[in-house]
Length: 150
Image (cartoon, rainbow, N blue to C red; front, side, top):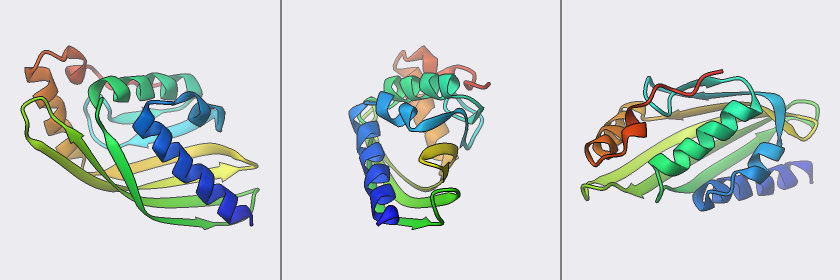
């Protein structure tokens, strides 16, 4: 039963990213949540608290306004005191030059007593960096910003 509830919440949270509804996701995170997104670009790096993760989500929404994530596989293991969620997903979005953006990856999410304390996002970071270069060419200066770090 517990694993089914965690799966439902995880799927809802990916849908919330698609809808740019980040507040419920952040409420489910511990204050000192650790978030890692691969690459050295405006979305890359590591964050170590909920406020930095909020700013990262807001930037994601601005830099990938049509991003749509689809979860293909979802596994949950462990009890409420130490839960690991593994999600295999794909992502598509419209780029301003009309080129396709199709990425895929895996999130490893760790929870303790109902709160997410670690998010490790693994994707094709070179593809993310290339898409940010396209956004920058179309006047989105934030696409060249330094990573949000904390």
